[in-house]
Length: 209
Image (tube, rainbow, N blue to C red; front, side):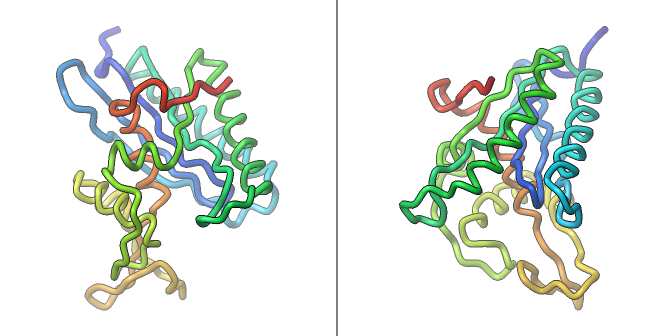
């Protein structure tokens, strides 16, 4: 079979609320580019078990689709942070949730002999976006996420990560031409996590088993 890409990296920003997933394709001698990006909305699913089942199905389906395009697939996901919001405490619940979802990703990938690497937030942001600083903005994007969103928009993926809001939601949104919109920053994070595979040195990536 003649494959289209020499390598596909699946970037995942895993969360029990909104999981971003991006597909990055690379051909020898060319720059990697984002082939697709989306976010899986898990807000309305009641239990963590049901959320994991939905993610399991989504990742399994995505791997099957990627295997039609390449013989080599790698997965990059975000590493659990040992603190939150600039505080020194250890956020046990957040670490537990992240570890559960990382284990799920590894379990699905293992069946297809696919390696899964995790990367620290600061590492992928510095490598891909160039900075971890917070930037206030007029688009409702959390300041710590703005540079990531801006980078993804500059890649030409605005239509993939910008969505019109039809309900009453106002937080995290902005108004344009009488309509309300929101950028999905989880999807943007997934793009950059996937791209970081091509920019980071091996010591910045941890093989998850």
